[in-house]
Length: 591
Image (cartoon, rainbow, N blue to C red; front, side, top):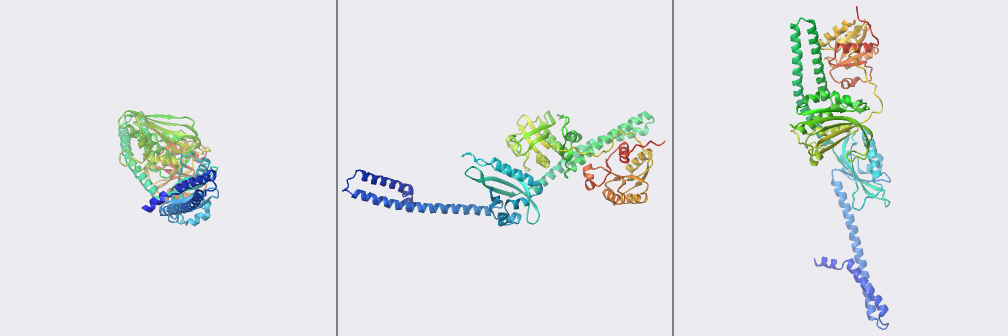
């Protein structure tokens, strides 16, 4: 302790002060003391020399201690980085090489730090998933552009966060969340070194995906109960009109009842299609699509969930350009946002507005990524509910955060995922007591799509000679379509499944003009039968029929010559319109 106090007393600063004082004494002696009196001058000179030697010794010791402390600190930081489970690296911006990479990279990716240091950024870029390379390049350029000038003394370097996939040594892609920040700069302010820290989130994303699926199943069960109620009401109407029709002898009343049965069937059909779209949204089918059409198609399911205290308002801008979107996911996003708005309203009277419009993004919006530039179609859902506090607003995208009922807290995370899958963004604004607004931005499609024509319901029923092969495992459907086709002058060959249908096609190949083919059948599916028909006689047109969406039903045979698609349930008029379109000309009705 005494030695430590003595070292502090004779610090370099104290010795330097004594040295300066003694130097001034020597100068004073030379200027004012007589030449004969050398004692004071000699003593002061000797003391100055001793103080100089002592100062040099103490400065050498302190310099050595500083170097040792720096080496110890660098070693400590490197050891901490090596013990970390995350990937730590330092990138030289000028040479595009890694000057440091910790040992965790070998455990995470299977590659040694030396392989990254030798390969540089080119080696790293080759490991990034092809779908993420463009984003990573843009992020890197943005970091360098925004970092050309040093920050003010009190400001901190702004970091950059991104999520991407990297291929490990065994060929598997792993998800990483990384953060990059400028670590050192050149004297002119240009970035010199960048620090990178990356965390493996593969298991976390799998967990979040499982939670999202759990939420979807819970929501599906809720909507199934609501839809079962609506379907029972529709079926009761159909059954009632059928019972009355059996007892009625007046043709005019019978025709009116038949029309009402048809209207009820169409209502039930729309509800079923919405449920299929919701249940089958796991597969992303992004194509050029009119956003307003998706919103309108999702309305029956949305309206079936509306309570009496909520007023739903549509504000859809006309003549919007088409967007790159999956219609099923758009409908699902609308459904989630509306359900979220309904829960925000609770039992109070309120309004939910669905709005679509054009928006131009210039990168200046602080709530959106600066990489979103240009024209976007914006879908907005706003409510007049109680709004959200800053704390609630900051946690709505956390999969474990919810202010809703158990199992209902993942809707916003799912909607955010849909926005990202479409290369767009989700923006949220909320003021306590004034409601919330959710906006999804969809990129505009570059070209107009060529959509398949499913026939016009208003096309007159017309037919002509020729045989049509009808393959369906449902007797009622075969009976209805057979009667409709025969009334239009066609001869129909029926088959109860795929195996029988293929056999009938081979036997009657010369006389069959086209094939109406169901997708889901026992023994042999519709896509398998289609493949065989294409192999034997590709010139014979085949129309696929299914209760699933067209995107899902035709995914396996898309681009292989399918002549058309009929969505079940369809009317006889729709089926005949499709036959007429495929055969390419109008045929007079039989006499």
